[in-house]
Structure formats: C-alpha cells, structure tokens
Amino acid sequence: MARIVRNAKLDTRSARAGLRQRRSPYWAAISPGFALGYRKGPKGGVWLAKLVIPSLRQETTIGPADDALDPDGVHILNYAQAQDKARQWKARIEATGGGHKKPKTVREAVDSYETDLKARGGDVANIGRLRAHVTDDLLDKAVAALSRTELRKWRDGLVKASPERRKTKAVSPGAKPEKLSPATINRTCTVFKAVLNHIAADPDQHIGNKQAWEGGLESLRDAERSRNVILVDTVVRQIIDEAYDHSAEFGLLVEIAAVTGARYGQLGRLAVADLQADGAEPRLMMPSSRKGKKGVTKASDHPAPIPVELAKRLQALTRGRTPTAPLLTKPIIGNWRGGPWKKSDHGRLFDDVVERCGLADWEERGYRAKVTIYALRHSSIVRQIKANVPIRIVAVNHDTSVEKIESNYSHDIGDYTDAITRKALEDLAHVLGQ
Image (cartoon, rainbow, N blue to C red; front, side):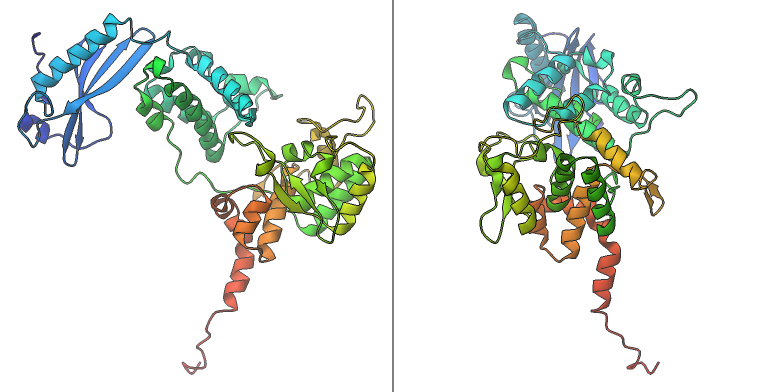
C-alpha cells in the first residue's frame, strides 16, 4: 500500500464530525491533479476521487465513509482505505490512456447536439443563440475538464452581452453594452446544459463532472417574470389591416398568426392539406413547434379553430393546388417569387407595420418593448383566458403547457381576475352596522 497522505480535516471520524454539511466536497490533495474528496450528508459521508490532467477531468464515487459504522474495507471505508481505492481507480484510468476516446471539446459538443436536434426535427435556433455568448476559450475546452467555478463565472457574465454577440448588432460609440434579462440567461443556460448532458451520455467519454454544470449553470431565482407584449383587439385589427396594405399574402400570414396564436415557424410549415374547411367548424392542423421534441409527425399536430369566413377565403386560394404545397406563400415582389415563408422573411415587413401603427415606442406599466409578430401570440393566449376558455384547452390551442401559461401570463390578466373575484366578495357592512 502506498504511503497515506494525511489531512487533519478528513483522516479521522472525529475530525469529519466537526465539518458542516455543504454541496461541494472537501478535498485532500494526494498528488498534483489527484485528490480524495469527502461529501458530508445528513446520515454520513461518502468518499470521492478526482483526477485532473490536461484535457481530462474525471470524478468518481469511492464508497461510504466510516462515520457511523466501522470500516470493513469493502462496503464501509476509513480514510486510508478510501485513499487506497482512489489510487487504484487512478491507476486504471492511466493504464487505459484515460479510458476513453479523445475528450470532446465544448465546441464539438455544441456541433454534435445541433446535428442531433436536426435529426430529431428540433429547433436549432437556440444553438445559434448559445454560440453567440460562449467565448472561444470555453468552446475549446474539454467538456470533461469544465469546472463549476468557471461555468458560474460565465453565467454571471451574461448580464452583459459577449463581444461575439455585440458584433452582430450595430452599437453606437459610447452606448452601454446590451443587457440580458435573468429569464434570457436561464434559457441560455438551459440550452448549454442540454448540450453538455448530450455528450455526458456518451459512455466512451467517461465524463464524471456533471455536477460542474448542474451547479455552475443553475437557474437564477425569480427570473421568469413575463415581459410579454399584450395588444388590445382594436390594435390587433389595425396591425392586420396594415399588413394587408402591404400585400394580400403578408396580410393573410398576419391574420392567421393573430387568429390562431401560432408561432411564426409553425405558420411557415402549414401545407394545403392542413386546411380542413368543410363543415361548420373549420380548422387548421397546426404543425408542432419543433421545440426540441423527438420527431415531428402528423400525430403531433393539433387542430387550431378558425372562423368560417377565413376558411372560405383559404379554400378559394388553394383550389387546384397539391396537398403538399405551402398554404401560406410570400408575395411576388422584388426578389421574392412566392414560395413558403422562411426564417426572418417577415421581420422587416412586420417592423414597417408596427411603425405605421404607431407602436414603435410601445410601453405599458413602465415597461418598454419591441412589438414583434409574437405579440399576436401573447395577445391570443390572454384573449382566450379572458373568454373563460379552460387553461388546459388554451395550452393545447397554442402548443404549450399549462405551467408555462400560468407562469408567463398570470400578471397580464391581473385586472381581469380582480374583477371576477370582487363578484364573490361578501360585503358585511350591513351586518356590522356600518
């Protein structure tokens, strides 16, 4: 047995009894890059081992500590026994050259996750947003070598946009750096964790530092206060009218966005076959939102009711077209020659509509925001809630969850719920003689 490296805090049961419980382990260095760890729990502690060498960081659990039971060298370990088992683990890692394929970097992990998302029909837009914020130093680092401290530092640094992010936007001299809201930071961290978990699931990588991003990329508290733009019905109709002034095709896109509350990406994937215009209850079979879901099939589409008059207009426009043809097409204007609406095709057009409607400086309750086509979605959700449509049905209609609606829109209907609640208040003034 190799010489035991002593540590006054860990090498005896009585010394460990004086340690406080905490999330991170107590570490005792054995040799450069190699350490024995101890994590204290409410019913006793556990031994860990950590090996950090170039392009490799691995941790493993050695076994329970002898805090409450006597050690047997197999199931319960004292400090010396744990250190011996840690050395054996280190020797196995070194004997196999690390015991895994070449460690993948964060950059490779991002690329791999993006490829997997495409194969599953998921939304890859979030990957682009993540790349805009991750520095080259972090991208070039091995996933197995990431630490909680550096990931926490990166997360906290998102309060200001990264240099890569600022290059994508025109910033006037002397302007303050772009700020990211806590909710945006949480969404970015969620994507990052998904990327790292994807690589950690590869058994050939032998990644043992998942706690680095579980703690380092932990969500910020009280971050999900919604900042949705909610428009009254008269303004929604004004936006639709202005869109039709541009072109019939763009007007139809905006009208259906307002009526169904669907995301822009879903509208662009509507096909002629998705229109069910026969009968008194016409609808559109709205494609899935592709928000990271495994596979996008017809079975996952959901019906979106539409007015009879709108259904008749759509039916007339699609007469003679093949079932697989796009339902909504771009106008034949300038460089456009029809075809389906693609990512960001609508951006400038909608900005012009917002400008003409006088909504460029939209502000409500002291909050200023840019009015985008997603304001029509937010307004649709709130409109249905106020019409007493059950929340579960509102969620299905908008391809989201009850939890998301309750967390994102509760404050938008505060005045409405106040009015409903007041009808049920008991006025006891006459009983009290007042």
